[in-house]
Amino acid sequence: MTVKTDVVIIGAGPVGLFAVFECGMLRLKAHVIDTLADAGGQCTALYPEKPIYDIPAHPAISGADLIDNLMQQAAPFAPTFHFGEQVMQLTRTEADTWRVVTSKGTELEAPVVMIAAGCGAFGPNRPPLDGLETYEATGGVQYFVQRREAFRGKKVVIAGGGDSAVDWAISLAEVAARVQVVHRRPKFRAAPESAARLDQLAKDGAIELVIPYQLAGLEGTNGVLSGVIVETLDGQRRTLEADHLLPFFGLAMTLGPIADWGLNLERNQIAVTQATAATSAPGIFAIGDIATYPGKLKLILSGFAEAASAAHAAHAIVHPGEVVHFEYSTTKGVPGGA
Ligand SMILES: Cc1cc2nc3c(=O)[nH]c(=O)nc-3n(C[C@H](O)[C@H](O)[C@H](O)COP(=O)(O)OP(=O)(O)OC[C@H]3O[C@@H](n4cnc5c(N)ncnc54)[C@H](O)[C@@H]3O)c2cc1C
Image 1 (cartoon, protein in one colour):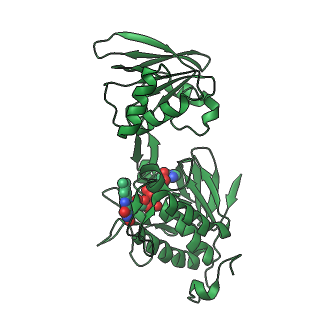
Image 2 (cartoon, rainbow, N blue to C red):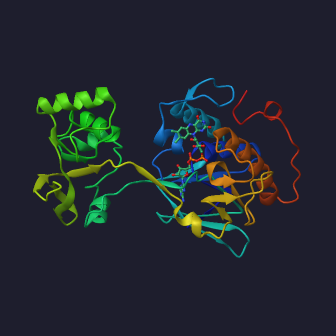
Image 3 (cartoon, helix red, strand yellow):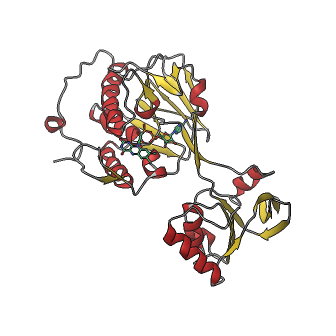
């Protein structure tokens, strides 16, 4: 079933979220799609705890708090979020609207699409193992821990040497039946206190460090994972009994299908008219890091201004002939506001 809306926003990073607010102030309903499991784009995926110092009127605010505030600011406009879905297709309909189709088959139709896709869709770096997709589909292999409790009493193999691998090993050691950490070298690239805690848990026998090994294969039947094969650089192999493999090899960003939508691309960014954020295609706008024009600054505050310009230009497409009288938010208020 195709759901119709005014604006489809691709990307729930800071700029996509602020676009919900700007569209809402002009009575434009929005659906927002993101490949990640949560809102926030780079702010929450890459630096949730780092303070940002150049958000106007916030002398310092963490990436995570900025996103919480943007979610609150968008909430009165009741956007529909589609998390964990990548926009794969963007095609023009006979009615001169756009049809958006996601990796999970969600179909949306709207006269306006705002691409707020940053540097592209985030996805985990996946180990090149035979049969990986089968075990991903059954949950045998997972890249994010959504519920720690799901691992209670399970045999868990964690692969990687960074903060995520170390932090989850420490955390899951409290609930899992067994935690083994596979890493190529003895040194972990994690915060020193976390690395020290991991060493202590290994000494206490609560975690086994499988070092220096790397992933070599998966074992199981009917999609149910039973073992992870690991090997040393000189080919010595071991099989670790496992209900779950959690590879933490970082996140990659890929422009992905956006490159195939016929938009004017300049070095992986979409060229737009600065005044409106309009792209070369009618009804498609690009805002935030993905957009470029002469003098573009890849900053959150530039993206916020682009979202406001795009929303005003979008209104003329969604409600042609209806005049928008420019009003301050102080005059207009927000739904449910004082
Ligand atoms: C370490 C670090 C520190 C930074 N510090 C600052 C700072 O101090 N000040 C500042 O202004 N900026 C800073 N930045 C840059 C800032 O984070 C970016 O400018 C900002 O995140 C851009 O926001 P955005 O919404 O355009 O894109 P993003 O935050 O990149 O969000 C884009 C979202 O779109 C999603 N997406 C992409 N393609 C698709 C698709 N096809 N389907 C579905 N979803 C898709 C992605 O998964 C992602 O969640 C920093 C960046 C980093 C990495």
